[in-house]
Length: 148
Image (cartoon, rainbow, N blue to C red; front, side, top):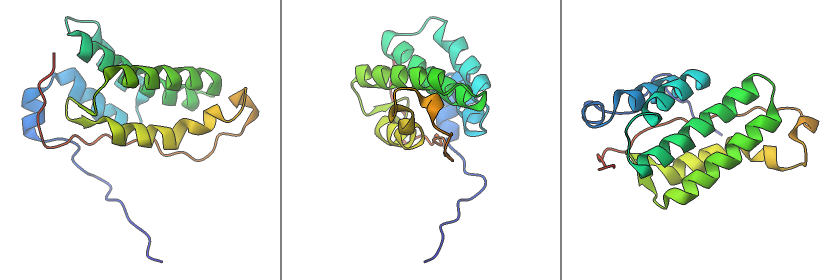
């Protein structure tokens, strides 16, 4: 069976995305894709704390919480990671859409679930060894979305 090889560098967005979306959103994507989850949180939080519409605020909060879940795993806190994962899932559900700011939310959440659903398999995730996980890679869809 042939093994699929991922390219080391894939552009997750286009110049049109850079022009259409806030710099903090784009910077957070870059940091997140590099595994710099706490820094991605900081970039998105900077935007979230400003004047943004309610849908964008909810979306950014979900992205922040999903990044923080991976940060907690990085520092050995699976219980806190589970809390952030569940909070992110709840916020994505409240958004009530499948695409926001060109991110395919269904695909992102499938990747998120693939990486983090093990946290829900026991009452206390500290009881389990941390498995090999692959955090989601953020790739924006070609279309530019209006956002509030």
